[in-house]
Length: 172
View 1 (cartoon, helix red, strand yellow):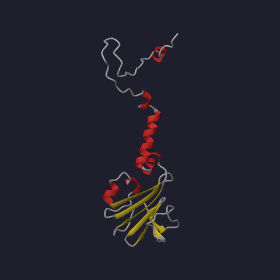
View 2: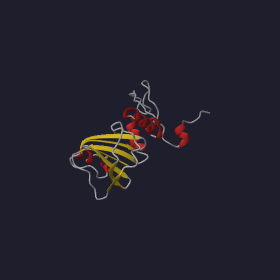
View 3: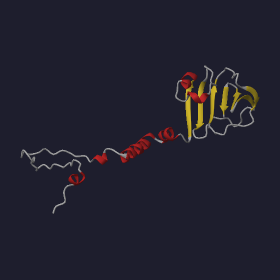
View 4: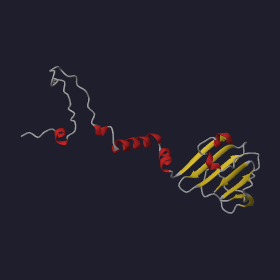
């Protein structure tokens, strides 16, 4: 006795692959072949995994960091307007004056640490800060940080802001 097709056993519709020499079962006419793509190849967790892997290969590490939020990221902006309109504007904590230029920021995504710098002739002032000694330097080592930072600056909660000429540095 022949084993019934899988569809007949499971109660689901059964797709058959049509060959060029096969005649239609009811009309007897020649049937044009068509490609049948197995369902497993187009949907499911395996496809999602392949798409994610392709995105990582094509998009680089930045894509993984955006998804997982780990590692160190660096951002650069020419003006304060550009920085405050970016998705990273929350990282500047209101420190940037309107005339700030050459803004650089490095942030450690998984440890909530940030260091940034900007150039501006405007002296930093904030009612939420007090003048004091910067006892601890930034924990992030950005290549644009000078070898020695000024010891006096502003203490703003967990943030420190110092000035060296027209360049100002802030870190938490």
